Amino acid sequence: MFAKRLSAAVAASICFAMPAMADKLDEIKDRGVLKCGIHLGKAGFATPDAEGTWQGFDVDYCRALAAAVLGDATKVEFSTMSSKNRLTALVTDEIDVLSRTTTFTATRDMRNGVDVTTPWFYDGQGFLVKKALGVSSAADLSGATVCTYPGTTSERNVNDFFETNGMTYKALIIEGSAEAKTAYLAGRCDVITNDRSALAATRLGMSDADAHILLPDVISKEPLGPYVKAGEGRWRDVAAWTAMALIAAEEMGVTKANAASMADTGGPGIKRLLGSEGSIGEGLGLETGWARAAIEAVGNYGELFDRHLGANSPLAFERGLNAQWNEGGLLYAYPFR
Ligand SMILES: N[C@@H](CCC(=O)N[C@@H](CS)C(=O)NCC(=O)O)C(=O)O
Image (cartoon, rainbow, N blue to C red; front, side, top):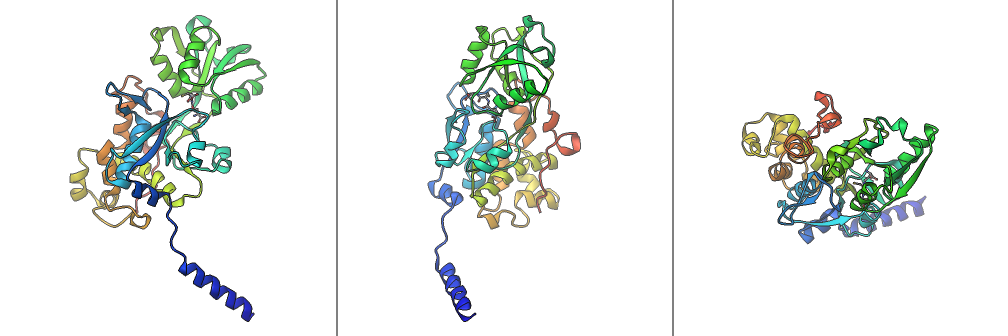
């Protein structure tokens, strides 16, 4: 009994004597730059503009995160990731966060040394075909050659879909969206399957877009969102809550332009979000006003959506599942209190 008590006391003193280990959040603050993994190039989500600056919905999430953590949205180093290497890049610390149309799945979250944060864009898998094929539904695709990408959920889902429906297909697995598009246009496959947002972006980039259609079928759930390395609890929280701050801002009517005045004149919930009341985030090691910095850097979720994916973008996506929970969608930021 005494020995037991003694060893507990020794253990406690060792614990107290141990210096706090620096975690990912400390590391990023010390470095002064956020390392963000993005897509190789996908319209609306991540594309370089005429000056070579990355733009897009996933790109701006990283800018918001840099603003929240470092107080400066420009302090981001972007690295492009293929579908195959993207999760490993987190494990090897090549990147701090992966913001690249990556579906949250059980296997990835549980086994790969990475953790999901919070959904950023709700998608689903579909099929892009040439109108000339004369197909109007996925049920007509039996016997087709299907182009898809290695290491993606698309590759697995398409298999489930054909098997479940007692249909056959031939897979042509091609790395890189541009290469898959070339193969499809050259007739090496009859159909490309992928997240529907990706297919819409691919179609948009075709000189004869009208000769291709996105079939109406949605064969899977693809909740896309940022991933971080496993075991980095504080950093995971920051990554998740930054996304939720932008979602909550839209819900509360806080925009890039009005955040400063809303910090003074808004109701208590808005003040808590913007840091003019309370101290949400301090426990994590964030500066007061971290969420306001993120909103002022890129705008709220709705502004981001309109700019890159929605009404003000060539993609012109409807909000659909990505509308707020009280507008028929799935966006549901946890309360800021
Ligand atoms: N959301 C799916 C698919 C994401 C994905 O990587 N899609 C394709 C098309 S946008 C891709 O990146 N292809 C390019 C590549 O092979 O790297 C996943 O997480 O597996």
